[in-house]
Length: 311
Image 1 (cartoon, rainbow, N blue to C red):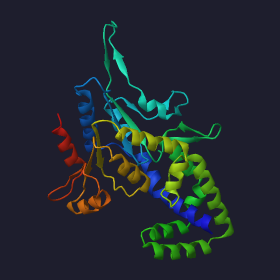
Image 2: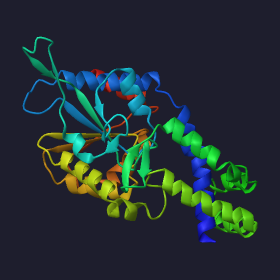
Image 3: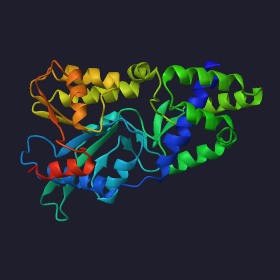
Image 4: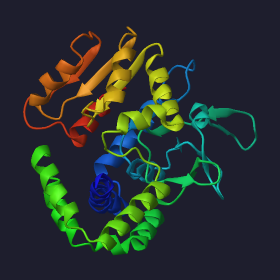
């Protein structure tokens, strides 16, 4: 029964969260945000550190990469190669240079590291080497939808979509009833779906095992270590926007990093009422600053207005 419950929840998540990612496109605010990042990195005065910044995200979608490509902003997503790109965390330490045609001088290319702490819809499982291969998120999501069309049409799915909005205790009872009513054929189809899903996408899924998967998975361990190392630098600045810090593993790494007195964490509160929630999480840290809207909400447009003032 437990496997069928997991499969139904994963199916609902695929249909309503992952599948719509194939149609996303950067908004004007996202393009504006990336433009400001490029300007800030490009005009960095010191030559002691590379013209490079890191964008850490727990989101799976490819909207940042799409925005950066539209702006012709150089970035590292951890993949190397063109015919069959392979993922390696060592690529995030690379610095790019552009040389003049006469080869008389070279300049550093502003670069953004895009680091997906929970994986990405562009990450595919390499069954041969147990590594990560790049795949088009549009092709991967579309082909997987076609491959699991039998379970996508299960009548029980609409009931699961209703249940996920309920309180945990009520949702558990209702899910149990749905599973108990499944036919043997539907249960077999769901088992195949769950196995195929884990073979097709390299993601940390929002389950109770998320922390365990992150710590034990070599790739995710390396990404968290990279996150911690960046925060351990001198004069480091971490800006958190749109992140709740409800992910325990990221929160704990961040708390440990705040022991570095030269690190500043700037938390952008979406609403004024969010301030106390964040303060409770970082109650023992004196190097956490907060950007709080006096009224309304602090959205991406307002955040870009803040970045515009950075010189």
